[in-house]
Length: 90
Image (tube, rainbow, N blue to C red):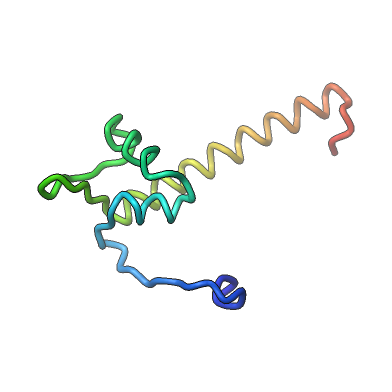
């Protein structure tokens, strides 16, 4: 709803939908080559259709959730360290 209020376009997809690498990059706000690297390294599951890679939306959203949790955890660690060192973060 926030995106719609800002005049941005939105798309509704079924959770079992398959998306392209460009769509995945747009969802995660990263480059398409970064997505391809994640796929090649087996970090995000995918399948090939001819020469094209297809990613299940569920798998991409699962990866995004893990990434956000890891980021949150790391930021909490950094905040605690900054507090121990009395760097002005509360």
